[in-house]
Image 1: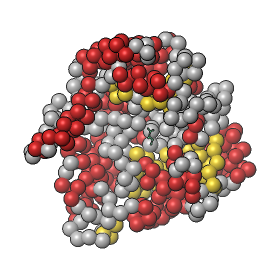
Image 2 (image 1 turned 180 degrees about the vertical axis):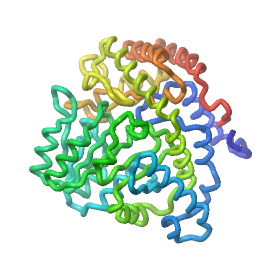
Image 3 (image 1 turned 135 degrees about the vertical axis):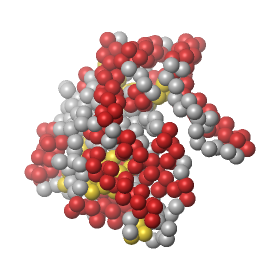
Image 4 (image 1 turned 90 degrees about the horizontal axis):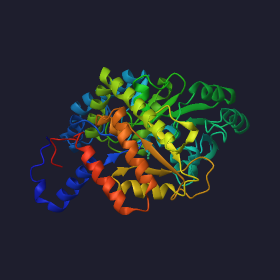
Length: 417
Ligand code: DSN
């Protein structure tokens, strides 16, 4: 149990923390980018390393007293390299966006061309969207999925890379439910002389477990977050070939960040250690089984899944033709005790703030111990809620059943907040 002595004196804050723990415990967390860390990882995040400034890198710090910070960062880097078979690891990025920013800054100049996946087809804001720094600083162009298969249009990747001659091609996505063929991206990059960067934030845990092809052999630079399927603390990480190590390190610090969050790096070290254990593979296998089961149940109930299914921890329901928007589905599910998010589906016309899709992931529920049979019950809750989005009374009743269901899978039973 974390030592929270004194915190109860701040009743306002204590109440907020308690309510958030209750929300996580008694609702079903199905946001595809979220997960539940171990209590030991929570403890690392709350450790005394939060007090320590350590700008720089091991043995090259701008502050005294960094001997243990050095030990910690070296340990974390070595675990990251070992887990993914990478030549170099930078474990300081505060998040995926700063990892991507540093990666671009290490090899691009403002105005250079990036070829990334269209946000509307499953890409990420930092892969070139106008509203992000990436779209403002660089000339960003996009590939997407084919309309007939909803799989990445690799022909388009080849055509665009040959005609645009981008400096870098970015592979990776936030709402693409299928395996990505990195060998084709490598070939496209080689043909036009581009670098290949892979943002594996969503499927990093599957890669670590050997259940998704690894981008490491194909890409010069691989970025990730540590909190999605990898099941670590909220944060980022960059893996790269030795040749890019100095440029990447210089762009994380002092390029885009100041002091690293050493308490979070401690939590990353533990998460990477957990991911090196054999039972992490069992966990990831179960994630895949649970997502497939959910996909089958939703499809059997008449919901159309983008690309017809899933190979990963997430799926995308296309709500067009059901009379529902993504926003309406998200709101109804929330009332029914299920947390998920609206998401664009390829080729749709709705605004992003409304959207026609619903993204669902199983990484967090699997961490709570749910198996396929439990996913059947979860699917029933979802289907019931999506069929009765206008009936608040019924949605609340589903929410009560969900709460009872969650009691079978205790979450952080020793924590008070
Ligand atoms: N915001 C994350 C997601 O939900 O996929 C991506 O960074």
